[in-house]
Length: 150
Image (cartoon, rainbow, N blue to C red; front, side, top):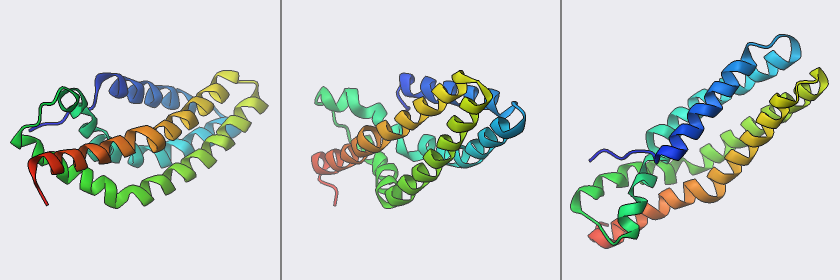
């Protein structure tokens, strides 16, 4: 079974990538700060899109009471997220620190749009920590329980 990241989350990730790409083309301290963020974020986004966010695609079915045996495959993703959660949160701390530098450089350069982007991305990380990651893990636990998998 293929697990799809919910479309709004996928679009949000794509938009964040695009805004960051634009910022990396800036010069001086601002561009340097943006490139540092991109260097940290790229491998992190790949992990999110590989195993942290796809389980969320099951929410609608699970909320509707639909659990099927092929959903068992999601356990590989949610178990990996659970095992890697400490690392994912540590990566967020590094990314947020780099975003704070980006925000400062943007304000110094008078580029408010990049400061706002940095703040939006910090909020995005917090949403993942408090909502998306725990929900993905709970999806795995729910599927495990409903299918009687140990």
